[in-house]
Length: 147
Image (cartoon, rainbow, N blue to C red):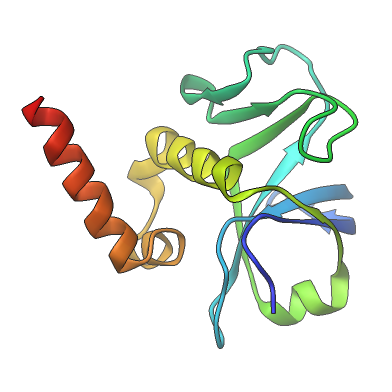
């Protein structure tokens, strides 16, 4: 069984544009049955990316500084690049490397919805935020609006 927060290494991972590269992926859900493994990819290529830890909403990135949560290099989670992968793909192509904690996964998911919420289908939302979690979020929003 695959657990949310698992970091996978995939050799020659194929991107949507057909290019391939060795990649680290982070699993954002805990799939059951035939549910897809909803992953986002990471990069350590700085280019023009900000070094501000956490959510970089305008860029659809989540920055994890080097030396934290397994990552030896500064790492950006690319929230605009999502991959719902079949469990068979993960089982045959991906190698489990490590895990990041639930707090970090929750922060990444919150950032994903802030950055890319308009592109996330209800099916994927249900994978990432199961019904009980959705109810708690709605209560939290209502409470924070009233105070």
